[in-house]
Length: 158
Image 1 (tube, rainbow, N blue to C red):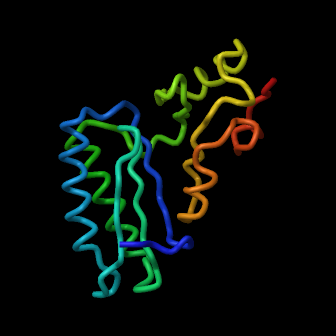
Image 2 (image 1 turned 30 degrees about the vertical axis):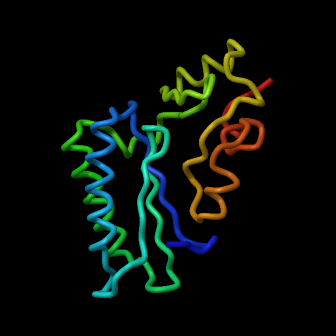
């Protein structure tokens, strides 16, 4: 199933890596949710995937039906249920993710700032921009060097 580059995207970042078993169980739940997800009784063209054992990417191609406030609320409640079932945080926006040797690390804002100060994270370090809102942005601006991300506005980077 192909999705438009303008499909809406939501990225949820886990506070810890998911085990293979957790990711498989979550993916099955996400697949069921997307297959049943509606907006005003119209089936949404939706999919979800887990990336790097840390991120849930939820996507809706609105060429078939638009995601509405109520349908978005359904997705949030569903993800809150996943949080509870798997004892994982998905809504903590004060956690920052970056790549180190092709491994995703998630740290607090204070830890992120300290890593920058010590030079462990620098302008070329890959960070995750979970604020992307379309498939096009996800494909081109989700994994970016720190110097090209929104992060640079909050942290002094060498």
